[in-house]
Structure formats: structure tokens, C-alpha cells
Amino acid sequence: MNVVGPRTVVTLLVGTFAAGSIALAQPVPARLAALAAKAQLGGPVAAWCSGQFRPKRPRAFAVAVNSSVLGRRYLVLDADGTSTLLAPFDRRPDLSCYSPAHARKLDLIIKRSKTLHGRITPRWRTTVVCAFVDETTAVCWQYSPKERRFVQVGEWVT
Image 1 (cartoon, helix red, strand yellow):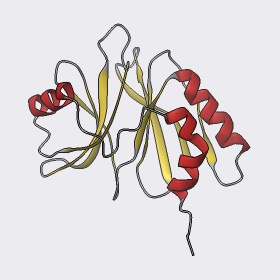
Image 2 (tube, rainbow, N blue to C red):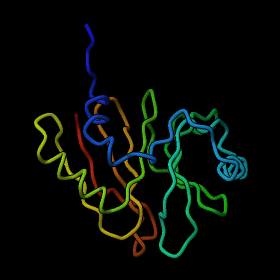
Image 3 (spheres, rainbow, N blue to C red):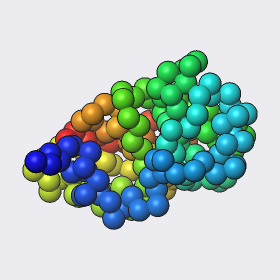
């Protein structure tokens, strides 16, 4: 008998929105590998996605690393090689990057779901990063120009 887990349910529901944004088990692009080396993450990139996280800045990467130095962490790597911690994660990394429009569509799916509970409310025109921090909880962030840091703009539980 096959048992469908919470991540499978989410994948089935949002797969059309995440197409091309989830990069788990895909080769790391050379540009990302160079940024990761410059940031000295202390471990390999386990998952990644790219986006326009800050206004008027080059595209960057959200990554998951299992680092001997940092532990299991989600980070944003900017084009200059600096890293910003988003959150720690348990077990297997699972992250996606969404345009604000796709994040709003995902929010509608979550609202209509009987098994998902939460919401996503993008506040700016930049990319939204969503990642599972444990087996059932996903958190979403977006860069706040006013606060000059990534802030939580959503969360859902399966």
C-alpha cells in the first residue's frame, strides 16, 4: 500500500506553480557554485532556486546547505557572495521560489484546501522563498526594503 505524505500532497497541489523553481537534486549552476565557495558555507548545496530577491539587484539564489559549520540551514546567497540566514531545517530540504503572483495563487490553493492550513501574503514585487522547516511546516519569506532584511510573509501546515 502506498501512503501519500504531506510533502506529496503539497507537491501535487502546487506543482504547476513551482515548475522550474524547485531545484532539489539538480546540478548546481557554475555561478551558484562560485557564490557558495565565496560564501564559505562549509558544505554542499543540497537544494536551490533562484529569484529577484531584492529590488534593482541581480538575481540571486536561495539554498539549503547541510554545513559542518552552520548545520542544516536555508540561506539566500546574493550576487556578491554574501549570505543571509533564513531558517534552520529538519531532515530533507525542500524549498521553492515564487513570483508574487504565483505565491498569491498558492495562497488561494491553501485557503481552499481541507488538508493545508495557513496563508501567503506577498508584500512586494520581489521573489518569495518558501521552504519546509520541518516535516509539516513551510515558511515563506520576502525581502523588506524598509527593514533591510528578509521577513516572514507566509506559512502553511500540512
